[in-house]
Length: 229
Ligand SMILES: [Zn+2]
Image 1: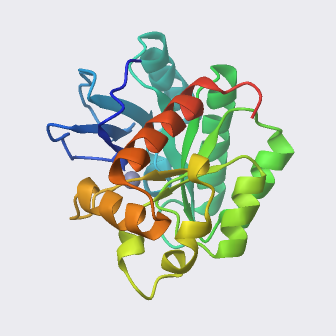
Image 2: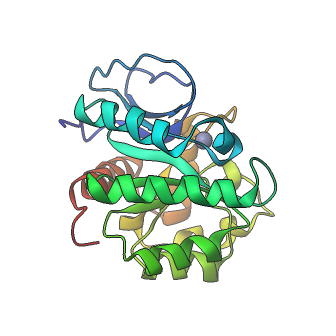
């Protein structure tokens, strides 16, 4: 993958198309029909979201993801994960998420995770399964302690619009996160990735140029280093 180091990287979105100097990683919902055409600025991940976890069997998940992987259409597995507030029943979410972990390990592809009130369970799964692929919590909104626990266990954290909000938890410790373990994303919120870069760069007291380079390097590490993590 050849990535321009002066591009803004939107690590996780669903619908958004990349602007002229942007790279977007689009997360596709596995149960839907979609086409994927990567042009060097748009990349894809695919997985069964916990909200939709009842909509496909484990077999169907394996087949459809297996096809995308063999065709080299996706750069990571997900989003999949656990959500205590919404979606399929817990047991179904759990089985589906474990299937994604298994596929991510088998093909040495990183895993993009949706976690709502499930941080402890996800951390435990990472330890119990001894998974070696890179895992990222997208739209991370947890406490500083939780952020540090994740990072200590090799996770990456992708941060969304909450750093804009003065009262959010992430706003208070964002600047203390290790720079080589973070990403920025719009998800499906009405915010531009450029605005998020500006806020993040100000908080970190680094230039936009430096931040752009850092997040591209992070992406390269996240994608390429999936055997030792
Ligand atoms: Zn999402």
